[in-house]
Length: 300
Length: 148
Image (spheres, rainbow over the protein chains, first blue to last red):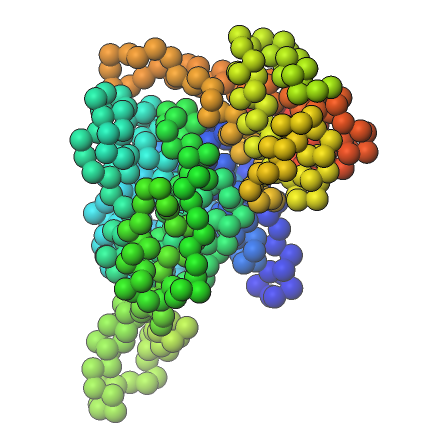
């Protein structure tokens, strides 16, 4: 696509034809606007992006926008997305799911995708409750949270997702807020541009089942993290990604510099090494057409 | 129209039991406007509103966000609105009220916005309406589509 064509990509091009069934005021609306805004900012056309989701309210997002979409199994969008990216490295692959899908049933995939580092962007709609199933506590519900499955308060400690993916080796860790969709769009856009797995934890209200973590609750606690302090310093980042409670940092919390090699790059390098175990010997055939294709992928 | 008259009028229009309930609704609409209006229009509206309402809008630390639409706008009002029914005995739940909340929330938002429209100068109203997402702008004058 030419530069001129990219500049003509408008957010309205992603407008879907299906009316969302989300509850009134749901934070998912903010994520939807931010995803569309990010793609428009980058000049990515609808046919160049694949949205992969799991199960949950937020996982209905691809139904409500014009782009390729794939609603997969509960907790499993990350391996699907990894496979899609390997099959078509030119496709922009974005995973969108909720805290239950990503941090609960999908927790295992989260850890290994972060360390595997495929070039995909992971937007997690974290409303600290299971919404679609009507109000059970989730892995990010705070200790003591009263819900239908914790009538006397949750006895489990909540995870801090940004710390989890950072510790698992993620090269891009950020936190956004659904009530500030423009800033969130910038984080998603930077995550798409980041070569490798980009984790964006999005704080958002569930207006129906979570009357604790509301728009105002998040606004009172969220503050813009100072990137000037150094987003590539792992030691400083460790403090940022763990911080929670009365002060919750928003924005880009960590970005590896230089970026870690992606899964696709390393897969291509492995295959290239198998074809060319010893350069300059009789086994090396520079005329092999597969070699050229793999070299392009390796160095792109 | 002074502050007390404004609140009483809202309480009557929405049929709320107490003045405090009306105050909550008004302040949540103001909260939402602070996020949906650019700073210049926000300041103009704050100057035109009765006492504490204008002060609340002017003092808001909200930053204008062009991606705030009518759905996010009513999110602030949803905070104080009852959205679930009685406690049931299964791990599921009664969410019948949530499905009706959209109509009630929108009714409240329209009531506040239309009263604001009648309380400010037409040129300020027009400036504010033009700066808001289309659907919300139309709510000021009793028009516009439903959110749900």
